[in-house]
Amino acid sequence: MIGCASALSRLALAALLSTVMSACGGAKVVDPDTSPQVLFDWFEYSGRDAAFEGDLPPGHYRNPVLAGFHPDPSVVRVGDRYYLVNSTFAYFPGIAVFESTDLVHWTQVGNVIDRPSQLDFDGLDVSEGIFAPTIEHRDGTFYVATTAVQAGGNFIATATDPAGPWSDPHWLPSVGGIDPSLFCDDDGSAYLLHNDVPEGEPRYDGHRAIWMQQIDLERMQMVGPHRVVLDGGANPASNPIWIEGPHLYKRDGWYYLSAAEGGTGPQHSQVVLRSREIWGPYAPYVRNPILTQRDQPADRDLPITNTGHADLVEGPDGTWWAVFLASRNYDRIHYNTGRETFLLPVEWHDGWPVILDAGKALPYTLPGPSWMQRGTMQSPLTGNARWRDEFDGDTLDLGWLRVRIPKAEWASLRTHPGKLAITPLAEGLDTRGNPAFLARRQRHIAFDASTLLAIPDAGIAAGIAAFQNQSHWYFLGVRRTEDGVEVFVEQRVGEAPTIVLASHVIAAGDDIRLAISADGGRYAFGHAVGDGDVEWLLRDAEGTVLSTERAGGFVGAMLGPYARDERVSPPRRPVPSP
Image (cartoon, rainbow, N blue to C red):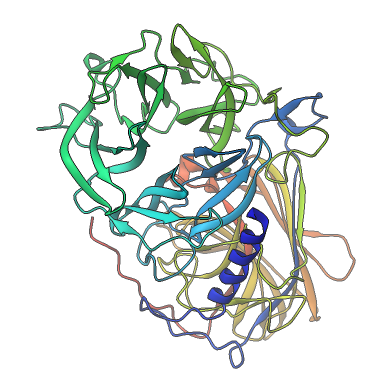
C-alpha cells in the first residue's frame, strides 16, 4: 500500500512539474520547445569521509542516519512504520517525508510542499521559509505543523497517506512565534505547543517561552486559554536563551515537556521537564541537559557539534529512541554539510529520559534497535555511498531540490529522453528568485561530484554550482566565446561582487565533463574532454566560503546542474519586509 501510494505521488509530482505556470507571479513561463536547452547526460556524487570508513560491526548502525542538510527532525510511529520530516527552509519541494521500519534505514516517499500554489518563497533568504516541521498522526490522518517564516506564519498540512497528496496550508493566524508541534492526549483532546516571546517584555536577548493552547483539529481552530507552560528554559535564573522546538509526551501518567535550549550552534542542548497535569507546573530534571556536546574538547578528532532539537519515539519492544540534529565539523568550527539527523537510544533514569550522559562524546557507530534490518546497507543517505543519476527515468529523483518555488518548468526529462534538459533562466545564483539550479545536498566533508553536459549555445553558461546561499557560492561553468569554449570558475562571497577565479579556453567539442572535488575547506574544480583525465582548473579554493560559520543561516551546501541565460538581465525580486 505504501509503495503504490509513493509511486502515485511521484507521478503526480511529475505531472505537476511539467505544467507549472506563473500562478504566483514572477518570471515568464518557459517554453521548452522554443527556448534553448542545456543537456546533461548524468550526474554522479560519491563521499569519502574518514568517519565512514570501514565495515559496520554486526547489528550496528552509522550516525548520522540522514547525512547532509536535514535539520530539526521530527518523528512519529504509526504501526510498524516511522515517518520523519525536517526543515527545508526556502527549498522546493518542501518538507521531505521519510519512511522507515527501524529508524535506521530511511526512504523518501514524498513531500508536503509539492505544489507552487501552496506557498511562495520569492524574495526570501535561503534560510527563511519552512522552519522545524513536526509530524503527528491520529485516527488515520497525518498532521505536519510548521512555520513559513516571512511567508505566512504557522500552519498545519494534512494527509491520509504520508506520500501525499498533502493539503494546502491550514493557517493559524492567532499562533505566533515558530516551531509549532501537536500533542494528542488519551482523551482525544489535542494541543498545540510553540515558541514565542514571553509574557511582558523579554528580560534579555534570547529570552523566549513555550506556549500551549488546545486545538480543534476538525475545524483547525484554536480554542480555550493560550498559556505559557515554560518561561525562559529549564533554569530561568540562569537566563537561558532560545527555548524552542517543544515536544510533549505522556508516559506512566507523567507529561514530559522537552525542548531545545542554547541556540542552534555549539551551545545547543536538549532539556526536559515533567508534570502530572498537562498545564503544569513543569518541574525540570535536575541533571539537565539530557543531550549536548558543548562540554567536549574543541580539539577532538572528527568532532560532532550543535546537538539538540530532539524528538522522542517509542519502539515496538518498549525502548525509546531520539532523533536530533547535529553537525560534523572540520577545522573545529566549519561545517558545509549543514545540520544533519542523528539517532541515539534513550535511557530512562528514575522516570526521566536521558539521550546522552553528560561528558560523553556522541558515537558515530553503535548497536541498532532490536528490530533493525540486518544484512542490508544502511542507506545511500549516509556513509560513503556513491550515487549516480543517469536521467533515464520518467520523473526526477525525489532528492533533487530547487531554490525557492519555481514559476516555470525549466528542468525536464521528457524533451530529450535519457538526458536532463535544463532551460536556462536569467535568474542568477545571487538573486532571490528561482535560478535554473537543480540541487542535491552535500553529504560529506570529502566528496567528488561530476557531470557530463553538452556545450551550450552562445549566450548560455552551464555547469555545476556549489551553493550555500545567494551570497556564498561557486560556479564551475562552460560557455562559448569568440576565442572558443571557455571553462571558468566564479565565486561569490558576501556583499563583494562575483569574480572569476580561473578560466581556460579549450578546443570546441560536443560534450564536456565537469568535476568538483573537496576535502574539508579545500575545493578543486576541473574539466575533461572525452575519456581523458580531469584537468584541474583551480585547486585549493577556499571551501569555508560554503560553511555555515561564514555564510550564516541554517542550511548546508548544495551541488548540482545549473544553467544561466546571459543574453538578458535577471528580473528583480522583492524582498519581504521583516
